[in-house]
Length: 376
Image (cartoon, rainbow, N blue to C red; front, top):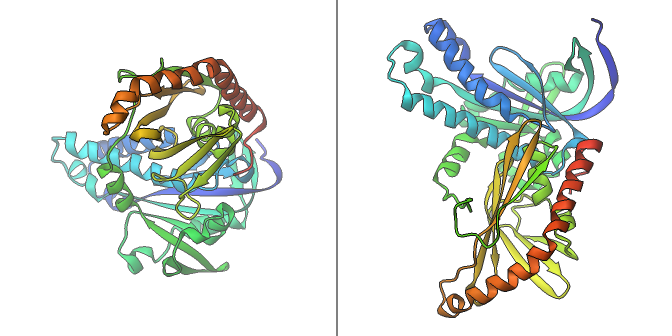
């Protein structure tokens, strides 16, 4: 079938490359090595969801892309790269712990690593036999960046390389210190500037961080809300966390974002939500894009109320599960007043539940039908 050429589009390119692949395949029993690689890629591929799409598999690498105007938050690609590496590291660790086999393949699982390259530029999408393939000089640049001097310069074998073109498109150049920038000379292309993030360090932070999660069996303030949306978990997560969209479904008058990390939302970031004269300060305490987010409302008398919004992929969409825990406080006065405050909050939220749910559903329908909104 002849490839159909579309118009030039701007996109983010993400390549996940398995380091040590050739050596691993050459020196290990094929049956076991293939099973190990199938398990690793089998864990990675389901995590690449809208707005990202898989363009192709190239033996030891997965190539994905996201059209720029479908990426809904500035930090989405940054978060995604870290999330994808953590999936890989978790799967690899699980295999090492659970295998009792001493063959060359199973004993060398730990030698495999994942490196990611993120670039941004123009491309043309070609529809070849129902598969989208990308073409253009910027696509070539992304693949050329796989052959780099990062390990020689830094000693890192597990990393994300982000080109400055990608950082500028995300408006996150200021997130990195001047000392973190490097340059790579690419034949026929010239110098390409980039930064490098240590993914092993990111995985260790994720492993060691205390999980904060309101579960369905916890002491809940309200019954769990379950809201089906026709979008991926990543887009559902954005609906629930992007300030302008959160303001819309909460029916707030305005929402201010404070204490970001140079523009990046992460644990410690504050949302100040205003309803008339009332201010509801909400602090992010656990941030796992596409999976769940937990925040804490810091109220009077030392009272705190935790909220978890969990995303569960189901069919071609997502179940959004929203849970509020009852308020609690380490202070005596707070403990005495908790019952009254819980009743007051229920009286504020319950009458508005149908309105909030309908707005979340409307956002899901809008974003599923018209592509993503511009980053906020």
